[in-house]
Image 1 (cartoon, rainbow, N blue to C red):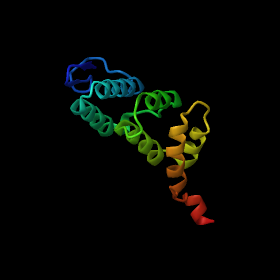
Image 2 (spheres, one colour):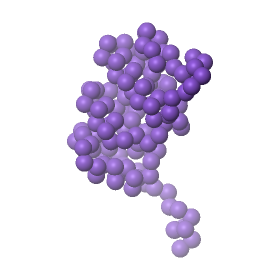
Image 3 (cartoon, rainbow, N blue to C red):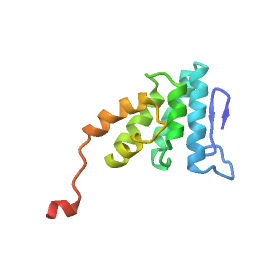
Image 4 (cartoon, one colour):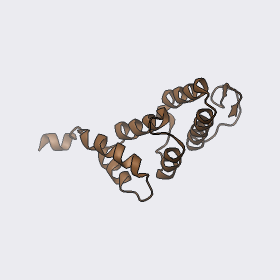
Length: 131
């Protein structure tokens, strides 16, 4: 990806080799952080829209990436909100709760994620419905 006040991505620019989804997710996050730091709201919005549009492509995010993003963004960051809601709404609640137990996650993330994760009711599996 190249930052020139426009978003050039292997997804859209005809590059012959595509990065792995985890690497591309990292690049999008880094590009968002750069645009945010430069105060380029249009670029950060475009990057965030690309993150959202390609949601199904992204791998599970590791706690170290969360820590880096939380350290480099403000509490009202749209990137934080996206990641928080993506994790809490896309992953099984037990998995989110296990992740929250990981050592090294920012306290701010835990304070934001825990109430949301606990409020989500998981649908019962077919096995439990038949019992």
